[in-house]
Image 1 (cartoon, rainbow, N blue to C red):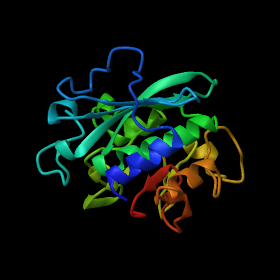
Image 2: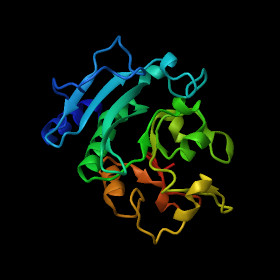
Image 3: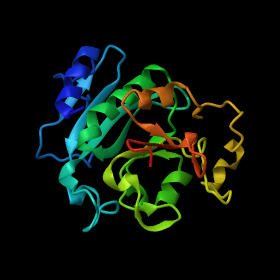
Amino acid sequence: MSGNQWGKLLAVLGVAATAVGMGGALLPHASAATSPVRGSSPSSFQYEIEEVTAADLPYTYRSGCPVPPEDLRLLIMSYRTFDGQDAQGEMVVHEDWAEPVVSVFHDLYDQDFPIARMQLVDDYQGSDDRSMEANNTSAFNCREVTGRPGVWSQHSYGGAIDINPVQNPYISSSGRVLPPASADYVDRSKSAPGMIHAGDCTVQAFADIGWYWGGAWTSPKDYQHFSYNNK
């Protein structure tokens, strides 16, 4: 579905762009040279969609990455914290997925799914390990697949998102658990805030836009990971 088609769908759902602002100055990652798409809804969920440049992504983008910055978009969105408060987060995704991803996080917000934090991986100098250790929900990062040198991760295309890595670990084929702090959550029979389980609101929200969950893989298991092409 094209971006225009998603825009029409979101308008029907009540989350399309309106003249309502975010209620404050744009965060420094946003490009001041473009007109943002802004929106809100009766649920108090708010968002902006901004263009980005290479200068906005000093650690996660470099020459030779498979997607240029002009094809990416910065999302500034509301989310629920673990203590039930509203917060404003940022992530970068491919422009084709900007509005669909907004619809996912609108749904999670309305269902009170908690998110620990939502920052660009640039805030962690492009380190996926540091971002995971901070329990950071993130998307774009031009990097290789974990354990597969020379193969671009889907995060490099802006087509993958990791959610609450501590509560939703990556478990390699050899049993390595990342981040290490997520060891207490390897047992997926547990139910705790921020965990993702088959058929829950998070998996369903992504399924509604045609994305796949890494927790359904046989090996490795990537409970934090969602992507548009199941990779």
